[in-house]
Image 1 (cartoon, rainbow, N blue to C red):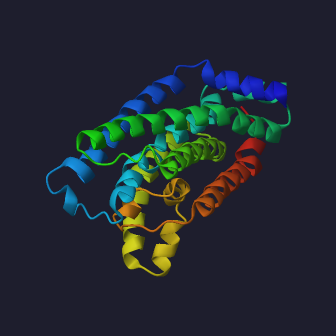
Image 2 (cartoon, one colour):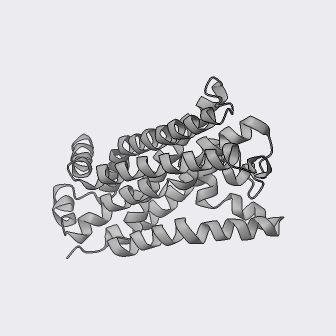
Length: 266
């Protein structure tokens, strides 16, 4: 397993894709963190932004941006770690080197953990730095001296790490690279936001279903987001969100293990 882990880790870090996406994530999260902080604390009419809960809700909205909007980056990195091998047909040598395909999948998941942590740390740090800077400039409390804020930031890193693992599992289930990326972008940028708003507005069973969607589960891990602070969507407890998101990883990974990874490789 150690040999497989090292091999899979090197496949990830010896390409340019991961650091290009990492830089893009850092810039995007800094922009969104500053933008959300401005909209809820400094912009004209910010007091009517709809947030309830005072400074704590503002901090959760700002510092939860990475988990709420930035998870697409670790998901894509995770998916590419599998689909790139199928696209360039290097998966055959991989399976020849280690005929146990399930072990290969486990090695890919384990190799993605440090990469996911890195994306989580960078994305969360960029969000917090930019957001806190705007909050401070606007005269609003940053709450960086509050242990609850640091717990939220730590769980943001955890959520983004699990998202990277979900990307690997998705790549195992959808081995066609273009299809996998299109599915990720359509779902994360359009389908889930619409579903969450629609189901949340329906109330009752619809709101309960909305809490089980992957994006909502990721936000639940952090313990807050702009959606929940504005009353647009409820969240599970953080451990419930972690359990739900981990379940998606297991289900997609199992689908990949019993379908795509069992097929003959051309």
